[in-house]
Image (cartoon, rainbow, N blue to C red; front, top):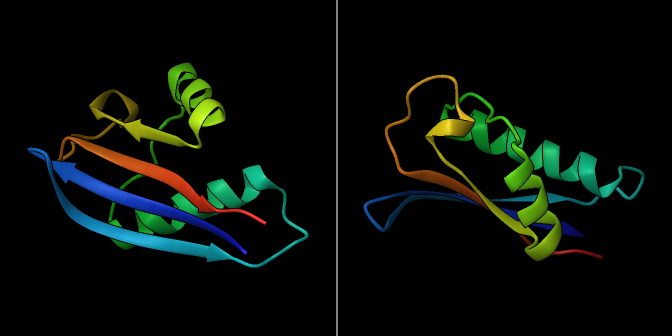
Amino acid sequence: MFRIWGKIFKDGRMLQDMVYENPDRTLNRTGKVFAGLHEFCMSFDLQEPIWLDKNIEEFKRVDKTRFYQDNFIESIEFDYLEIQVIEED
């Protein structure tokens, strides 16, 4: 099972969170991460953020990254969206 946790923060408080599970073993890890991010954005009513080099490097290093205003084209009402892999088979 592959699980990823998406959280929205503002002023140091978590406003919303969701866990995405993907049991599909035919999909690669990158596909599962993108599918999870898509589900978070649909659930939180957000546009999908742009992956910058710093996000890619951080995610590769610690399986977690934060998307700030500079990752979004539209204005956001929160400080950042954080995604983190919490289970991987």
